[in-house]
Length: 245
Length: 108
Image (cartoon, rainbow over all chains, first blue to last red; front, side):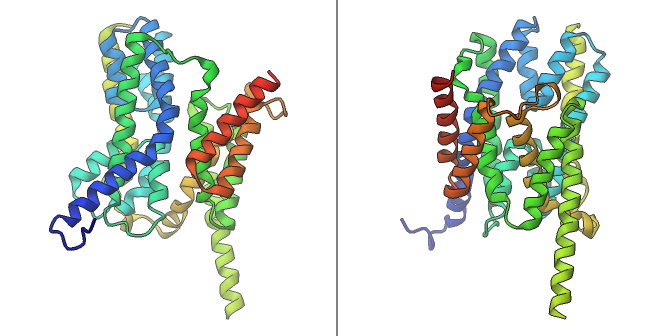
């Protein structure tokens, strides 16, 4: 099929990016599905109204933070404390926002508003692989596709969890598909010495500080590892310049 | 907790979450970020992915398990090897899930 001279070539390209993004999100969806089912089932079991449980997924739309909030709500924590906990658990998203700010800078506000809404761990992981590839003119459609695929799956799985319970037997280990997909995305993100150093350090620090509440250990680990990686890159660049001089 | 309080949590949680995600995209254009900050950004993806993977595979604090009896750790290592050789997401998942299932069958 030739689209190069077709007047709607641009829209074909956009649609292609959108569906590529959705398709590349599928492996992650396998792992997210049981989490959504469990959230729905847990919320129901805790005695929350169905609409409230679904509203968590619809409006807060943040996996780990929703589980933390649900736990705190069940133990009757004050609302302000729960909101603060949600904020802290989601602090890492501001790093994603910084990372994508440059890629999205040229877009009109409505795109930025919408894509910010969809900027989860999963969308960031998949789309940052896309942003390492060339021809990024329509890559925001890819991000939209990958984000919407996750959003829709999260809503449907929460609803099914509320209505019929978690359903999937634990012995299937479907939840394991999520870290495995992250492995598949992590390996190609390591492209040189500094990124390797960053990854190793972030892994060690995250495990070492993982006992800190609300994923705070992960945030600190990422910030330290990113700083060390950038420093190492600066050093190796300086030594290359010296050798060339 | 009253239903009204739950709605406060949901709306507040929505605002808090959106604030983190929109922070830089909506309010800090790249040209206003210092150069050292921008240099660090390409390291965010490998750092977050490594942090998430490591804590998922070996646990943290009291759940930390670095022994060979940790099936998820072994399966994750198999998956990492396949990812490195194949650069294919589905093969990676298949290898990891297969290894986990096999260990469950053989070792129990």
